[in-house]
Length: 457
Ligand SMILES: [Cu+2]
Image (tube, rainbow, N blue to C red):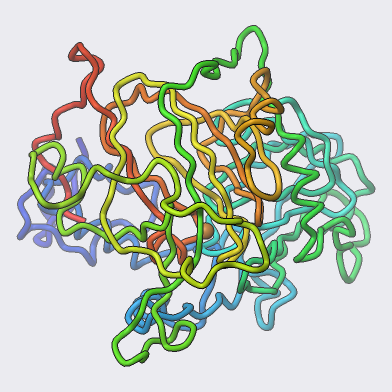
């Protein structure tokens, strides 16, 4: 329990009533701050907000302007949101942007030591290439699971993915750039963010650090494929792979960017339409009551359970010449119900309706990424090439541009789990659905009761 100073100079327990908290007097030093649970539940939201306002806030996408206003305006007008103006590494855009040089983030290293870099792509709308000048990277983990170590001179990481990377400081003591840039989508921020790997010691630093020559260019699709095809589970005696061999529930899901009509063709999408992204032609509509509450409390009329298991129309999904009627999805709140502990296979099929790499992300479960390819998925020949020996266990998988990705998992986590494209603009346009995983037979395999107090959003 922490003691806090009151306005009158006396001190008291931190679990205090709402009227006694003076936000201006909350400690600046994070080390002196009481834990949030030590405050009265009614005060916690105000205190969190007060700390957030003090910063530092370190968004990896940086916008000139109010980011919420930019997004809300774009959603209201039905068009693309502004691109970001910069990417950041640990809050700093780096030397290649105007005015940011003094603040460039630096990683100090000692010659001969090995370092663990934990890379998280929390960029809003772009997959990213990342490299460190003259230093190889050894990727050893992804999304919290070990993989067979990959020696590489660059990575490609999608929003939502995390990687554990070893770097050995074994080059001439100097300054080296680490740099990130986008893998091109339909629209993308084409700036480059940098930080500096700085060796500790006495040497003459270069006026400009060397730049990673192997950082792929924006459109280098081969660099994406070559890197992602190397990702394999560690699959050791201690880290077993347990990929379902038999499939109970099979889903084939097309991933598309389209648009829906707008009154008087007055929106900012193509020909005055409103942009709408979809899975199996369903463009997800945010429900009035959240899905977990609606399911748990049995509130009717919030969602439907008939999310389609296959596309409503089959056509040549990746053709350059698409039928006219495939651009307009249906807007609905549809989910898929899964029995407890069923083995599930999902094949995501990218389409040429706004073709780009879509990082599909599942909440509540990791899954095995058993296969990928370009073009249309062939349900007879492609499964023969699945990797069921050492597929990586992930929670986000990039569906290749105009290609497909297959995943398998066991639905052993009862509850309601959102699944969505991790490019924020696609998710906000409806490239989402949710799974309701039913309870198992016992209390331990059933959804838990909600806590007595839930913070309002
Ligand atoms: Cu997407």
